[in-house]
Length: 103
Image 1: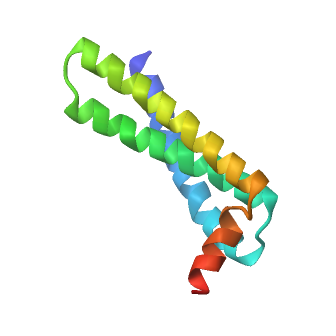
Image 2: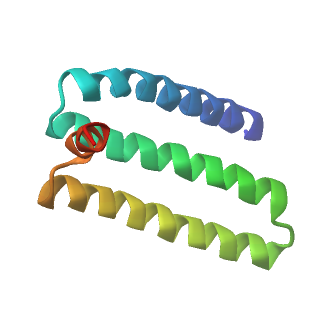
């Protein structure tokens, strides 16, 4: 049960990390909406899992853990929504990074 779930979670984390390694050159070589939205999803998920580990390591007690996890879900949801809004209403992640590099 728990061991298999942990193994699948670990595999998922590695898959998202590998996906990010592929998305970064793709963002440079062929920027576009598909890459922008893929980056929004992968970066949000990667950050969510990373901050979840921080909560696991440093937050103790039933109530504080529940509050921290609820806050993490709110933060991750707002992050994804904000990145999607930026992709749809503005230049998108790829173009924004290219604009920063051109400074």
